[in-house]
Length: 456
Ligand SMILES: Cc1cc2nc3c(=O)[nH]c(=O)nc-3n(C[C@H](O)[C@H](O)[C@H](O)COP(=O)(O)OP(=O)(O)OC[C@H]3O[C@@H](n4cnc5c(N)ncnc54)[C@H](O)[C@@H]3O)c2cc1C
Image (tube, rainbow, N blue to C red; front, side, top):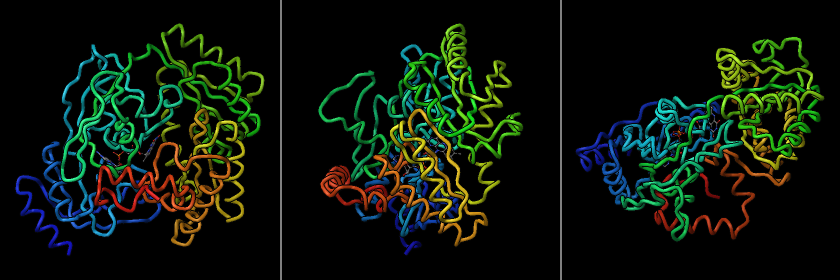
C-alpha cells in the first residue's frame, strides 16, 4: 500500500518533491528516547505555502492522513506518523518574507529554524525572547504549534505571546490568515490563539508574523543552592511574591543537581535544591537587580554563584542546557513528563514524583521552570531495556494522574502529542471533549490532520 500511495502522490504532485520516508521522518526526539517509531507511506517536501496548499488538497481528496513535521525536536511524539500517514516535511519553507527591525517585527515561513529567528533579531539589537532548548533543531512553526516555552517564558511568556499573525492551510488546501501585522487585533473569535499550541491537528502553519523586543543591554544569572527542597521551594514563592523582575526562575532538585555539581565547580556544596535565576535590563538596572536577588536569597542559601564575565555566563547556561542529556547518560533511558502545577504546589509535585519512582524502583529527577510551576519530571530506565522503559512509561502515567490530583495541567510546554493522549482521554470532562472535537471538525471535517494525537 505504501508503494502505491507514494507512486500516486508523485503522479498527482509533479512539481513537488515526494519521497520515500527516511528513518528520521518516523520519530521525534521524545519518541526516540522512548524507543517508539512510527510508519509512513510517503514524505512530501513543499517549498512554499502554495505547494503546501496543493499537497493538502491532494491528500484531502484521497482521505490520506497528514502529519506536519518541523524540526522533529518535539518531546511528545506529536510529529510521529502512525499507520502509514503522509509526512509533510516543512523544512523547505525557510524564507524570511520580511524583516522590519525598526517596527520590531518579522514575517517568517514556518520552517525557519528557531536559532535563525533569534540570531537575526540579535544581530539587529533586538530580542526574540522564547528560548526552547533545541533552537538549532526546532522550527518556528513547530514552536508556534507547541506554544514552546523555555527558561525566559517566566518573564516574557511562551511563543504565543510573540505571535501577531498566523497563515495556515486547512481542509481541502484552503489558506487562511488570522491576526495581522499590528500588535493588537480583536476581530471575531480569536482563531490565532486556537492555532497556537494546536500541535498540527487543525491544519498546517505556513507563516508567522512575529513581534520582537529591544534587546536588554545586560543579563546576569544568579545561582543559589538551598540545603533542602522545602527551603528551596519557599525561596521560589518568596521571589515570585517579591516583585523582583526575574526573567528566569529555574530549578533542579537534588537528584538532578547532585550528579552535575562538579561541572559547576560546586563539588563540595550539598546536593540540595538549586535555583538558576536571571535578571536583565540596562547595565545599571541589571546589576542592581542582581544585587537584590543575591540579598534576597542570602539568609537561606548555602551557596551562591553569580558570574559577571561573558565566559562564565556562557558556561553556566551550557551547563543548564546540557542537564537533560547528561542526566540521561548518567541514569539511563529517560521518560520525561512536562507537568505544570500552581507554583505553591511545586514541592508537593516533586515529592510525589520521587515517591512514584521509589515504589517502582526507578531513579527520578525533576528540574525545569520553577516560577511557572513547570516541572520536567523524569523517570529513568537503568538498563534502557524494553521492560524498564515500559515501567518508566507506566510511572509517567502515574505522574500525569498525580498532577491532575494537584489541580495541575498535563503539559506546560511540550504538548500532548501521542504520549499524553490517554491521560487526556481519562481526565477530560465529556462536554469539554465534545467541544474540542467540534472545534477540530470546523478546521478539519475529515479529521485528517495528525489523527490519533492530542484530542481525547
Ligand atoms: C534538548 C531539547 C530541549 C528542549 N527544550 C524545550 C524547552 O525548553 N521548552 C519547550 O517548550 N520545548 C523544548 N523542547 C521541545 C521541542 O524543541 C519543542 O516542542 C519545539 O517547539 C518543537 O519544534 P519542532 O519544529 O522540532 O516541531 P516537531 O517536533 O517537528 O513537531 C512538534 C509538533 O508540532 C507540529 N508541527 C510542527 N510544525 C508544524 C507546522 N508548521 N504546522 C502545524 N503543526 C506543526 C507537529 O505535527 C507536532 O505535533 C526541547 C527539545 C529538546 C530535544
